[in-house]
Length: 262
Image 1 (cartoon, rainbow, N blue to C red):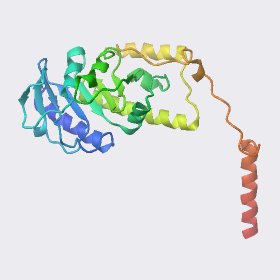
Image 2: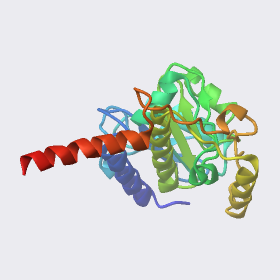
Image 3: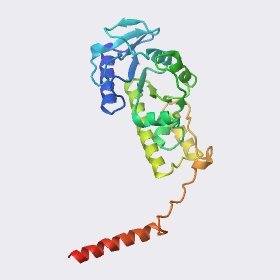
Image 4: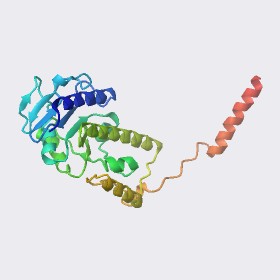
């Protein structure tokens, strides 16, 4: 059994971090932790995650009945409870709307390619879950279909969801997810993302097993998607000059200007 006051304080701190990092706006987002086999502590509805107090937290049973607390639990409490019922190894759930990850979710693009070693180890792939109306069963039912395989999810046209063994573990996965989404976005703007090959992913999979991570790797290696294996040659600069020649010409022009002004 976890200490109730400690869990409340941890939820307040994680809420503060989620808000401070811009992962939520206004009263968005919700975070919870398993208190014991029958009870869950969850953030309340209608309050900014950056300005909560331990007294704001709500304790509910696994059916959503409020056991203690003066506020109403998050409207998405049943998504949290469904996770706990179906993943006994999970003790915390974090739902937020981090901009880059949510951008991929809105664009309908999963983060399912094996790119960063750290992400492959910690999260594997991040699937895109089909849209469902928030606050209803339709919202979390698609998550349950693949809940046993992943610890991080993009929620179509909505946000992101991460789950973990304890509060900070779930939160750090949200950080990792958003950091990865930001890097993936930058790489796409630069024109290409180089994907790890099958052998490289296999070595990372071995590390996952050593660390006790049992969920699916879930990301695509370059052999599985050959179009991602090679890096295309950069386009030559306009006018036909190669990069070195362009740099030389700019340098010569600058030096000439400086000499004229001396």
